[in-house]
Image (spheres, rainbow, N blue to C red):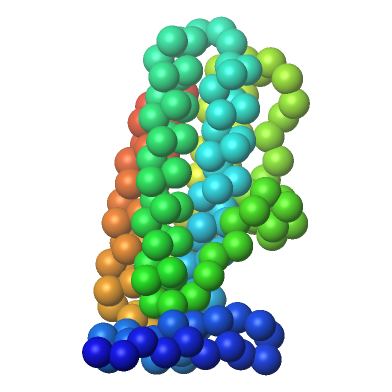
Amino acid sequence: MTTQSTTTQSGTTTTTSPFSTTPELAAGVAQFLAPVVIDLEALVVNGKQAHWHVRGRNFVGVHELLDTIVEHAQEWADLAAERIVALGLPVDSRISTVAANTTIPPLSEGFQNSDVTITEVIAEIDAALLQVRRAVEGLDEVDLNSQDVVIEIERGLTKDRWFLQAHLAA
């Protein structure tokens, strides 16, 4: 069993073995999963910010739920990133890259009422869900195993969104 590394003109190195996929497949998957990783990493950072600064009604429940959402987002970012890496491509989720490329809306600075925090985090989840749904649709033609990854992420994000939304119900 031999392993071979190839460097493209852009400097990206792909590693192949008899069991690996083609560089074209890896690039096709990465074009859909990399934006998902970026938005999930932004959700992690902003989710912690919201967790630290939430105030008001249902503080404990919202504070703890935000920590859970952060944990989920980190797990899903790792899942998507590792899928790209498993196919032989690197992932760039450095904070500067995330800040420059995320579609997640900015979070208000400082302490916020729980209703404001929940509304803002829901908007962030909605933005992440748009990227995830683009990936679900795009990966249908590229790689069904990678599509399964984003379907799992979509289910989880939708559930976390529901849990947040329930705090706003009358």
